[in-house]
Image (cartoon, rainbow, N blue to C red):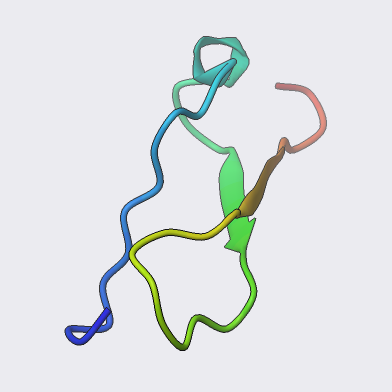
Length: 49
């Protein structure tokens, strides 16, 4: 966290996304301490994909 870089692990169903065109959005609570915290991740898929 001190380098402003995050790693998201254990995401599922990525194989169901199109190879191009999808946008992945990730949000999480502001971390003040600790080495991990929950994240909410979802994909926005354009029409016709």
